[in-house]
Length: 258
Image (cartoon, rainbow, N blue to C red):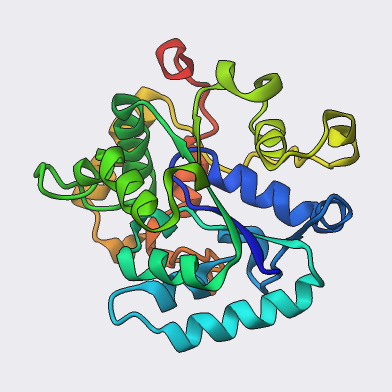
């Protein structure tokens, strides 16, 4: 029997934290009935980039089947767990394929209040050095149509297959997103303490003044000014990672912490 759980996003809803948590606990997850499909880049951006690429326009069902067949074999009957924050963006043919391939499937998605999501996304754009886009026809405004995404998934998998969680600390199980995810998976609370938790700061937070300064840098400095020789930044050398890290050393303003 082929069983799978897909954590499909959203971006800016703690996905980096969750993906590091899952990657750090592969063995513990296996002990609790889940196989977090292993990839060479597993701790950075989840474990489904190859699935996402195969599911993009130009849909490649043969590539998907090959990936899933191999993971099913490695899972040895356990429920396979996938996480990637942009799987929500794939279209109907992908979710139709999932419905046909797996015998049991669950979709987990975290949703953030749209105004807070837009603010977080804009902060990420500035930190990353992404040119700012103002048109409401561009990302990120299209991405806040949550109903459209849920309706698309439900059409092929049924509404009962979708588990929606609010991205808000006070609503997380035990006010912790890692515990919240384990609870959604159905892992008993008494097993929570067997999981390890990373204490690394995984994303840089800038205060308001630093964000304004970085936005000016993005506007007036060419992208090549950010390039670092032999950079290992998996998202690309153009992002100005070291500059953002330095600016992130300043304490957050009270309004930024809210």
